[in-house]
Image 1 (cartoon, rainbow, N blue to C red):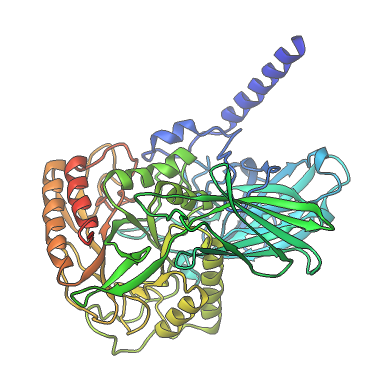
Image 2 (cartoon, rainbow, N blue to C red):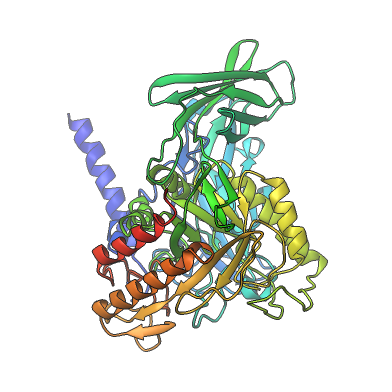
Length: 604
C-alpha cells in the first residue's frame, strides 16, 4: 500500500514538473482542446491504424531543441519543445521562426523496454517538414525528405546494450524559398498564405519487430466481383514463407486467404458483402500474419471496405460521379486542416475528429483536403464516420499563367530537374501512404495553377498508378482534356462557365462568405473573405441562396461541388466555424437542409 502511494506521488510530481516546464507560447486564440494537452501524454493514440501492432512506445513529449545557422551544430540546447507540435506553433511551447538559412535540432533520451530484447527496433516518424537527418547514440541512422509522409528506420544496430539512448534529429525547411511541396506555408504570412511549419509535426514512436516482419499492406476492393486483393510486403524475400489474411465483420470471420510471400492474395468476399458509403460506412477488420515453417513471426491488424469510385453518363448525357455504381452528387467543404494552437497538428485526437463530425452534421458527404496531408488517424476517422475525401497534392514551386475557363493554350511551367524529381517522389509517397483508406475517392495532383506542370503526363501516371480512384488533374487550374474530372473555381457564387461533355464537370471551389467575430480572430485588425457580412443570419441567408443556385446548376452539368470553407484560417474569416472552433457561424439546421437537398439531388 505504501509502495503504491509512493509511486502515485512520484508520478504526480513528474507530471507537475513537466507542466511547470511547458506552457503554450504567445497570446493568439486557441481551441478548447489546447487546455487538455498534457506534456506527459501527448497524442497517445496509436498512430498507424491500417497496420497496427500490439507493442509500441510513444516518444511524444518534451524534447530539447536548438536553432543554429545552417551547417552548424549546436553547442548547447536552448530549451524544451513539446513534440509533435511545430516550433512555430503555440503548443510547442516555443513559438519561434526558423527560416531557410537556419536548422532546427531536436534531442532526447529514451530506453528500450526489456521485453523487446532479441527483436529489431523500428523508429517511426509520422511526418517531419522537410529534410530530416537522424542519429541514435551519435550514429547516423537515416535521412528523409518530404514534409507530409511517414518513414521508418531500423535503429537496432545503433542501440546501447543497456541504459539510455540518445536521439538527435536535425531539420532543414526552406518553406517558400524551395521548390518542394509546402501547401499554404510561407515565410511571410498574409492573406491566403499561412505560417511556416518546420520540423516534427506528427507522432514519433518505436515498435519492436521480428527479423522477418511485415513492412506494408496494400488492399484493393472489387465490388463487382465481390473480391479483395491484398498485397503484403515483408522484410524478407524468402518465398517459402506464407502470408495469411483473415477478414472479419465485427467478430465474425467472413473470408480468408493465403499466399506465398510476395504473391497477391485474392480473397472471395460473401455474396452479400456490405458496401461502404457515407450513409452506411461499413468497415471489415483484417488480421494479417506472416508464417515461417508454420510459426507466426509477425502479425498486424488492419481494416478495409468494399466500395467503388467511378463515373458514368446519365440518361441526359451528363457524366456523373458514382459510388458503388450509383450516381452520387459529392458535396463538401474545403478543409485546410489548420489549428490556431497547433498549426498543422490538432491538439488532441478529439479535436482531429471534431471537424469531420461537424462536416457530417452540416449535411455534407465529402471533404476536399486542401493542399495538406493529414495524420493517418484523420483518414481512419473519415472511414469510420463515412465521408468521401478528395486528396490534394500540396503545392510547391512557382505559378505559370492561368487560364480558368478554357483549355490551356499557353506555356506550362518548366520545373527544374530537381523540382520535378521532388514532386514525383513525394506524390508517389503520398499515394502509397494513403492507398488503403477507403474514404479517398479522388486524387488532385494540382490546385489552381500552383506549381502545375506536365499536367497530362502527371494525370495519366496518377490514374495508371491507382486506377481504383478518380483523378482530378487540376482543381481550378489550367485545363487539359485528361483525367476523369474538369474542375472549375468561381467565387463567390456558383457558376457553370466551362463544360466538358466527356468528363465529370465539378465546381471545385465557391463561396468564401466571410464573417469576422471579435475574440475569435487570429489577426483582429487584418482579416479577409471573398464577401463579408455582419451576422450569422446574413451569412446563412447568403449560404442558402448560393446553395439553391448550385442545386439549379446540377441538372445543367455539375456533378460535385466544394464550398470554401470548414473553418477560418489565420487571416481568412470565411469558415463555417471560427478558427478556434468555438463558434458555428451559420444556422446549422438551415445549412444542413440545403446541403442534404444538394447531396440527394441525383438519388433515384
